[in-house]
Image (cartoon, rainbow, N blue to C red; front, side, top):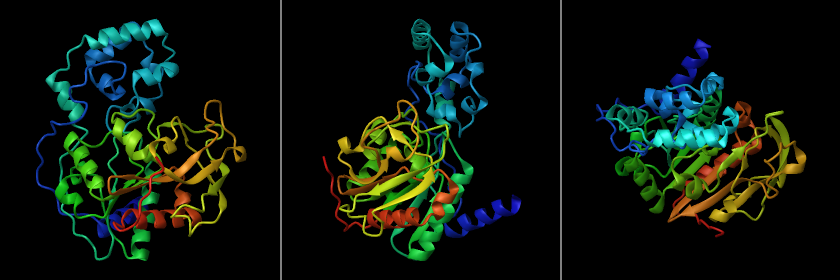
Length: 368
């Protein structure tokens, strides 16, 4: 294990690691700093606040303690950063009248300066200084994760992407610093790739920098868990950038073989077969990206695997492109299993998508 970790660390270092950033000022523009306590507050912030936690425990004693430890960690990355009490009502078996009582008592609580600082502590203003390897296009692989982090998955995706960069002649660097999302740094890159990013990770100014970057012609590639959070705290990200909200995935069994159909009329379809089968964790979405103007590249054949109640979509998009201003957007829900990043069709898909997203001369079409 130690040898493997060292090997992966060396790969990342050789391809990307920059000089140490200058000492950053404390973050004060985090999006949720002043958010009043409520059942919609990130669970992590309720768990960190003695007053807020006490409210819940008094109305429904011991109920939070019934959650698995996986859901209640208070140090990011933690699933509690992508969950709220409102979303967890079913798991906690809290009746509507109790939810209303908790809501009223939480809203009456002040948000103290200490709590504001704690909320902002999971963001950063660290601006990395990159030494870019030779090659084109120039790509920023982003890995800041405040929510759910599956280490083997993230590591496998990084290794595969760095391998693609070497094979394709791309210049790629890696960072887990949200401070990279500033106008000056983003101008350096043709596209940004979010490697299974989970949780709210950008400050208000960093959000604006990403939006401006895309509007002016930058590219965005999102992979699997980048659209897999049960709760979002940035509507633009879920509804416009990704264009769909995660609903769930099968759990019995979690990983299944399924048939993927390719829209051969899509500009990115030329290197892909008309269909293929593979085993993965299959996302379902509560909203369809077509309604946000997406041009769907892959769809999932729901008759080819077992879905649980509430996960059936009918028309089931799996990967798509879209446009924001002059920017090119690509998202694929494939990629939970580490071995999927060596699966031939998936690798071909990512190579085509990244090349397209990073090509400022490539046409982008929206269906909206």
